[in-house]
Length: 214
Ligand SMILES: [Zn+2]
Image (cartoon, rainbow, N blue to C red):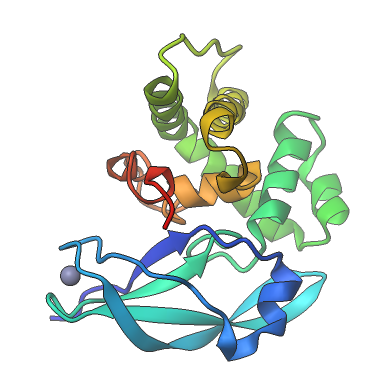
C-alpha cells in the first residue's frame, strides 16, 4: 500500500538565496529515521517551487532508511509542507493580520501574495490556534518551568506562545535556534499550517534541534 511521503524539517543555516544558488549541491547533513533511528542514506531529491522575491525552483533532498525502507523529504526550515511561500513571508503576514490588525487584502499586498493565499493562511492559523498554543506553551514550559502568561486567546495567544517558546529556546541554545518563523517550522516538523488538527509534533520535543550538535 502506498504511504504518504514523510518529511523532516532540518535546521538550515542558509538564507533562501544561498540555498537556491547551490542547486542540487545543497548539503543537508545527517538525519536519523524518525521511525527507527537509523541514519538515512541519500535518496536523490526533487524540485519544488518557492515564492519569495519571485518564484524559484529549489532542490529538496530525500533520505531513505535502509532498515525500514521509508524515504523522507528533507525540508529546509524556511519551508512548510505543501506551502509555496517562504515561512518568513507567511509569518510576516500572520503578524500583520493578527498583531497589527490589518485586513487580509492589505496584508496580501504587503507581502505580495494573492489574497486567497493570505486568507488561506489566516484561516488555517485560526483553526489551529488552540492546538498550536497548547503545544507551544508545553515547549516553553519544558524549557523553563515559569508560567507562560498569555493575553487573550485564539490567534493572538498562539503568536504570543510562539514568542515565549522561541525566547526560552534561544536563551540556552543561542544561534542554534533559527529566527522565530523558521523555529515554528522546525518544531512543527513543517506541519504548523497542516490539515491535521492534532497538536504539532510535540513528540519531537527534545529531539533534533535540542540534541548536542555534531
Ligand atoms: Zn527507518
